[in-house]
Length: 402
Image: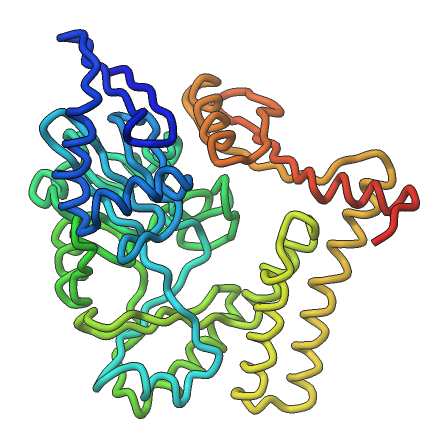
């Protein structure tokens, strides 16, 4: 199918190759009666969002309507795959709010018990079946060709989606050869996947913890660790110990969930994870917003207070935080002063240079400046450029004012 559009439904054209006609009125009617009804929003509100570019059309394995921003109860990252007589809705993954203090937040937020699952450091992926094709979507709603291939190498998904076509698998792509977020886990190695939720396509309703874990076990699909189920009045002290241990092991943190998944989960991360994120970001300080740094420093302050740390423990936290800021920033300034540019290199395993180029095109669609630095024997070195850091650092080094 070939389609073209402007920013309004009135200027949106859908051309059917078989019958060679432009169905402008058909598309308006289709979007109003089918998509808007299925999503529970009005046609007028949908059209207004398209004009304001909060919702856009693009071509994937099918024509797609992508929600770039939240629209009422519809999450950003939601995609609607469209054909003449059918649509498939894959809702965006809901934002998980964070707690700065475990107690009394847990008692206030949850009912009787909480289930604590490990939060792993990777990138959020939704896997679904559309037109009998298995696809992997990044959090923003774009189909990632690299991830789509890799998840099918890690897992036998055909049987799962044949039996459960209306489910979406939500998980984390992990490992040191991860092209988005590189982090070492001994049980993962270069690349792997762990599932944390199974949700219904259209409603976004998550399966309860026990039901989800049994289902995944039945299909031999890998899931994040369940670290315990605790009464709410005892959960805070249990989770403090768990998070402290995870931090010492170089792991990220936890997601605290209602066992029935009727209440929104909350997340809580270790000090070491905050420092690692700050360390990474201060390699490219002008490509990250101030809110990124500020929020992690705030987490450190509240966590240190709640943990009732000794003077030595507090000093260790302060040193970790300070080193995460200064060392990477000075390293980057020095490299740019010597004629370099702010960049990061990642090696990915691919079957061909063409496959590597598909991933580069995907990054460009996300607004990321990247290129293939080298390709040899199934390994592609991808270089991502952080232009704002390069340009602003150069300006200051040449006498520009801040």
